[in-house]
Length: 229
Length: 108
Image 1 (cartoon, rainbow over the protein chains, first blue to last red):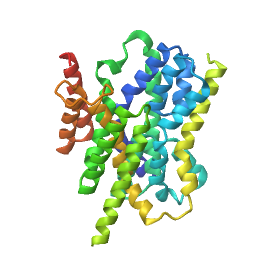
Image 2 (cartoon, helix red, strand yellow; image 1 turned 90 degrees about the vertical axis):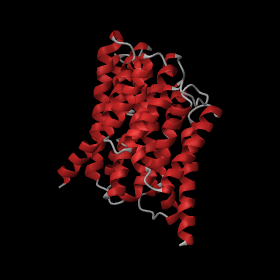
Image 3 (cartoon, rainbow over the protein chains, first blue to last red; image 1 turned 180 degrees about the vertical axis):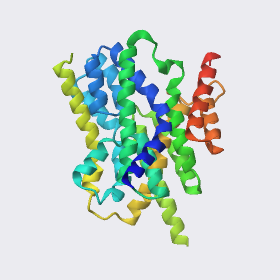
């Protein structure tokens, strides 16, 4: 039974990895080009396991930015995980602290989106989440190694249009969620706020600002409708 | 070959990242969650996925571009349509990426 759920997590996550692989490749290639060694490049994927934060750290390493600056930027970019963790927390109550910690380590955007969709459709399963996390981790590490091996032999795959892989992945995860009026409203609000915030506020604050605003609006809309009924 | 200073920076990044992933679990653990918070959390997935990509599609170069010259918006629209007509994720992603490659090769 557990194995079956684990495999279901693997199976539901696998197609999405098409969008992750080019990013791991690109990360490996770019990290080498700015002067990180193969060992350092791989170590970051093994320990940090966060695409956006890793990418953004590269120019900072290249410019010789300080450790505090690089770590703070990683913290800021990853703040959205706090909200993702919060939305999964109620379902993970029955797990032990080490289990929670282990599953939290593997919670990336893709594994989170797949896992929470399953929670909302059928229910929570730790084995399912583990399967989803594992595929994301293996894909990230293998594609990083691929990028290291390719090194300067090919140009950065993101420059040939593969930078669209991430938006395409998230659209494939997002659109099926928009089946009711409230989710559609939340999506429109998040889009409006994130676009305006992204062009006006420096850094990556727009992610957390738009997410908070839109999710609060969704909660208020639902609360108001429940009161009417 | 690894330089100590770089390794320490990577470890600190890893700790910062893990902190963001685990804190909510550690804090919210046993405590009950109010219905109001629950309603809010229900919309977090949609809000996050949207916030992560909307600026890339509508303002890929740091300013808002709603025009046929914006290849991200065109490829995005194709991916949205594919997903809307219930195509599997692979088709949505493949279609969007193929559209992007085609647009790039035509010099968009």
